[in-house]
Image (tube, rainbow, N blue to C red; front, side, top):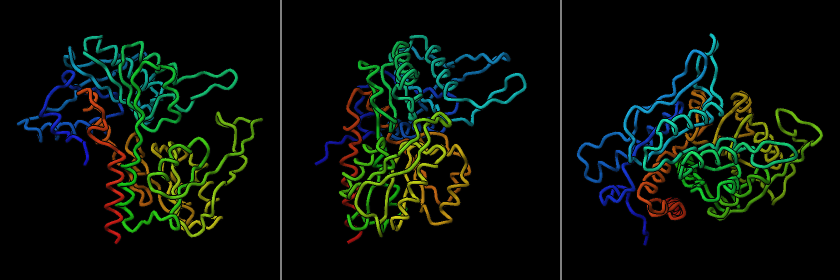
Length: 386
C-alpha cells in the first residue's frame, strides 16, 4: 500500500510553517503561474471556498542608467516565501542608452538577489526555486578558473536563503559548497516517461527492443537511472577532446567512442541535462544510426537550442533523429513548441509538490514518491499492452 498523502489533505490539515507566498523574478512567469495554479486547485479541493493566488506582485525596474532595483508590492512579514527564477530566459530585454539588451544568467541572478533584498528580512523564511542552476555548468576548477555556482550558492546562503530547489543539476556535487543549506536536486524522470508513453503508447521497454545510451560520461547517472527503472540495457559514448584548443569556452570534441552492446534494430533513448548548440547530441544520434539503431529519442531537461532549430529540422528530415523531449523548466523558443518533432513535458506539478512539502515541513516523497509513480506507470503500460 502507498503511504503517499493527497496534496489537498495537507492543505485541509493545516500545519504549515507560515503563510505560503510566491515571488516571480522577471522571465519566470510561465512556471510560477503554473505552480500557483496547482496550489490554488489543491486549496480548493481541501475545502477553501475562494482560494486566492499565492503570488505577490513584484518587479525589477531599471533606471535610465541601467541600474535596477527589486520591488515587492505587498507585505511579506512572517510569510514563507518561495522565489522562482529562470536564469536561462534570454528573451527578457531591457533598454540601455537606446540599445535593447537581452538578459543574461548574470542579470537574472542579480534580480533574484534584488528581490531577496526587497523582502528585507521580514519573511519567516526564504526559499529559491531555480530549475536551471545558475553557473551550474562551471562545476569544477581546472587551473585558474572561477567557480561561479559554488560562490553563488554561498552568496544565497549568506543572504538568508534556507532552501534551494533545482532540477537535474549538471553536477549536484556543487552543493558541497553549502553543506548546511537545504539543497534539493529533483529529476523529472517520471514526467518524461509519462509524456513519452502518451506520445508512443506502443513503445516496448523490452531489452530486445529498447536501450538507453548515455551521450557522455558526465550524463551516466541520469541514464543509469532511466535504464534501472525501465529494466533495459545501458550503453555510453565518451568524448575524445582536443585539449590543446579552446573553442567557445570548451575543448572541441575529436570523436565519440561507443561502449556497449549492439543497438541494431532497437529504439534508443539518449538523455542529457542540456541541449545547447545540439552538435554533440546530433553527432551521437548519427553514430547510433551508423550502428543500426531503428529509432532515436533524445531527451534534455533544458532544451536551449542556442544555435537555432535548423540542424534539428534537417536531422529529423534525414531520419537521424525521431523526436526530442524537453521540459518547461526553462524558456523555450515559441517556434520550438510548434515543431512536430518536439515533445514538451510539464514539470510544474512536481515543483508545486516541493513547495507544498517544504511549506509543511514534510518529505516530498510523502506527497509524490517518484519511484512508486514510475512503477505504477510502467505496470499500467504493461497491462495495456497485453
